[in-house]
Length: 176
Image 1 (cartoon, one colour):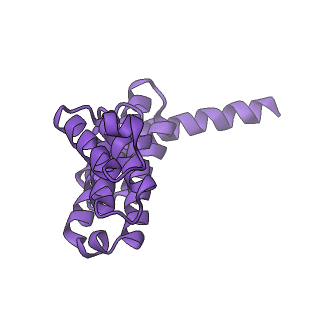
Image 2 (cartoon, one colour):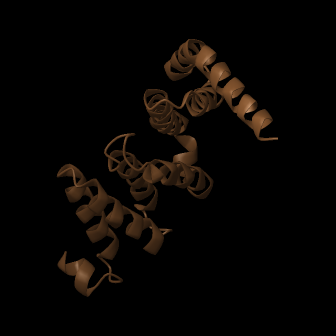
Image 3 (cartoon, rainbow, N blue to C red):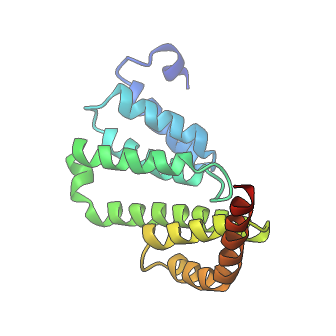
């Protein structure tokens, strides 16, 4: 920490950032770990640990959200970072299996979030909005268990949606 505070641009700056990020990651303080890993690959983009720091940052961003019921901007940021990192670092571009695993994890978190939004609308008596989000899940995440569940839920609320649309059409006709 002393090196980072007093001599970040010195010969030990890159390693100090890596060690601080790793320590916070080990302690499950993912936001703080992400801060140090991000600083490392931004300040030392050509350093020997830049690609490793970028990988760790992607993982930290996914873990720091607290789940799909919370703010998922970190998950979206990790996806952008992953795409950028593949182009910038050969080490990352060669690790197709790891990248595919991260993209799958990101998609699962996003599918869960969208599915939960649809469920919220269904529970609160907004079948049209729920139907829209279930359709969104089906189109964005085909082949997933969320898409299958969304199709089932859409079939369950189809009658309610049609009733809601008919009611709105009748109200509009009466207004004119």
